Image (cartoon, rainbow, N blue to C red):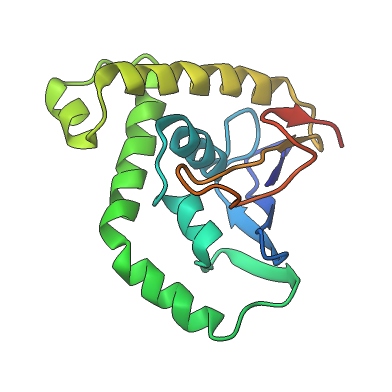
Length: 176
């Protein structure tokens, strides 16, 4: 995945290449000094080992309405598979949204009630560790110049050899 830093709050287009060689551009919220929403998901899902969140679904063949096919041959019946997976994973996707929001709020110093933490299904220490990683990522993102990219290679937890996106490697900012 390659997230390009925008100069302002314009929607961010993220380049996503799946293991099967299919490449998409994914349009999402963010831009300017704030981490793009989809990057928040990638970092939180990776940090907490969430395999069936937004990016696990993309790795498995979900194509969100915000995604535009750029290159590569899609598998037969890709559209039907995408719709089926979205329906089957509605609950885990809802949970992934909740958890990403929760970690984002913790990263900004919000004190959360025990009930909110319990509803996440993750220990407070794990959420706080993810929040610290997100805070560090936010500082790195803000330091990027407009036009620079954050390239992230993401692997769904527990699924060896599968990636939601490929890059020149590693986590963190990369050049143009």
